[in-house]
Length: 430
Image (tube, rainbow, N blue to C red):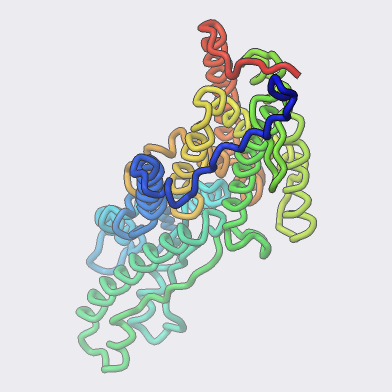
């Protein structure tokens, strides 16, 4: 087109572009990102590090079995044999509140080790009193022993804490017995008194063995983390992909930018689409996780069909929760989901640091945080023969509860938004 004389008009000049140096001088542009970034850094630091800074200080009521198999007669002048005296002394002392001692029979203790109910055990043998009595005679052949049983299936740190507590209790018992023997053996020479001063030998054994390729009891935690990450990242990828495909979000890869025509669809139907796709795509992600961990890396894992079904349901429950949170909170949904499933989940999972060794806030979170529920089930399948009383039954229940909450919350929120007429975008024609 031109003017009335037919002279062509010059092309309109493009609007001037703003330079970054100009925008950097605007305080309001800095304010929100600075506050949010600082707040996130503070929360992440406090939440992650707060649970593991000092497990010894926070340790309280760690469950440990105490087995007294001693059948010997009491020593002269005493009413009870040494095994009974040791058990009463240990239980009364309570190890400063750090241990919750459980006096059990040997069979009961083994069952609790095999189901992950205790982190370890201290076993007093049947001939303990008789062996101690023999030290004061010429028939002594070896120092009597007490056995510390570990449970690596409960995690390397938890088993180590239990072993340290049981060893300390056994050493204290040895010192106490030594005082009694030394006082009674008035005619003993210096060598005999040295033997009698610390008469008990402490041995350590694995109470419930796990495989060599089990990461010293850590594969359950990392496998659980993989399931949570698969559900979390998969849910977000699916959510973003659907929004892009339906024209509700821009698609930008490198210098290329596209925007598809907007498909008219309600929030409820969009959520239904995302959840259905999550259910289908999670099958692939879980299969790849198992292939990589079990086949490629050679991780010790039994009950593979059950592990696969459990893994699928666990990752799916997380994915459905992510979709529900994204649908309810919109742009900040991914951040909210990250806190729910990962930031608060890791320190309260009890998979690396026992819940008995973390502050009370994390023990409270452990009642409902998803990662703790999932890790109990994975640990039961990998280390405790998939026994329901090892945590698998509760894990299945919590997976069902979590999935139901995700579905109810997500569709309740989208239905409310639809009824109120809150459209995501004004549809743009093709």
